[in-house]
Image 1 (tube, rainbow, N blue to C red):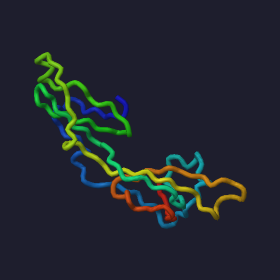
Image 2 (cartoon, rainbow, N blue to C red):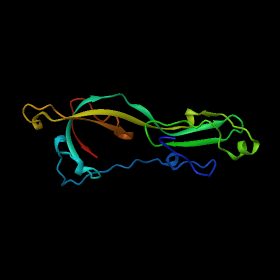
Image 3 (cartoon, one colour):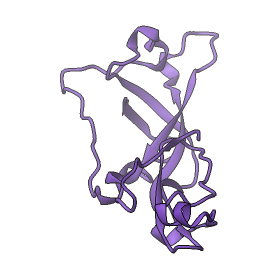
Image 4 (cartoon, rainbow, N blue to C red):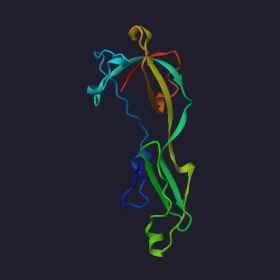
Length: 163
């Protein structure tokens, strides 16, 4: 299913993202100068760039599911589904060997208390007014803040984005 990383044959095995208690953050070199939004081109794909922008809109912080946890109503088995994109298709039938051997298709129920969520916030940024050529419309970009970066900016803030 789209956006799902299935957990192989190890039944009941906890996914690594459930055990992980840290975040990885990339910090650019102090020597690297920030670019303006208009300078970022296709050649920068796959590179770490810094852009200087102004925040124009900040959405509310929402939960983003990372691991969905289900319980089978037939055998009581717990199934974990890693979610790797913003949308996913829930698992409907129990994949455990107990249900397969019994010839039953156990119904799965989502257990929100057992799921892992991450804080998620969408922010709209725009190039600085002094960098917009005369007669042009300022370019804007939607960015996603996750984890501890949420609630770190407000509309009107001039920020450096690294990504």
